[in-house]
Image (cartoon, rainbow, N blue to C red; front, side):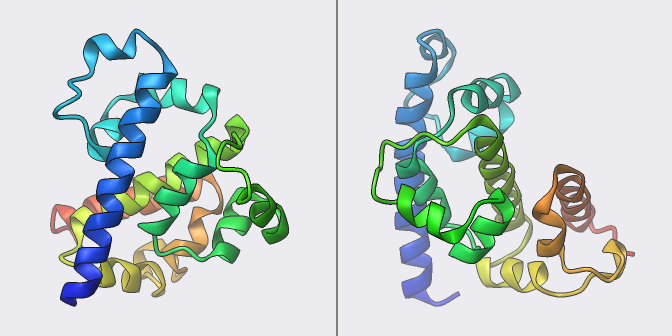
Length: 171
């Protein structure tokens, strides 16, 4: 990965880590009791399913969504399609950092963030992961993994395939 791209990704990931910690601490005062503020990061969020459930109920702000969006390979058109809203609606929300997404949209944002996070862990570089997402996969019925992310069943298939790749199991 080019040094500039890596530095940009690292900077954006740091921004997501900070925004996610701030968001998580606002979800519920009880979360402060079991979250180690010094060690909390984006990865920890995906490990705590109860915290994810609370986050979905509360909804995430556009500001946090925007930070997550910056570290994913998805375009504005992709996000609009995945969230089942128009691109114009997303652009309208972009004018209000405090806009809170509905739970159904929050859940989809978190699902896509989780896929992106795991994919970046499995592949050596962000570019390799993005290439995999956009290439037809025999194991996924010759569909592109990105095409399957429109619903939770497809997301689970993509996550399972990433897990197999991570463990060296190839079809």
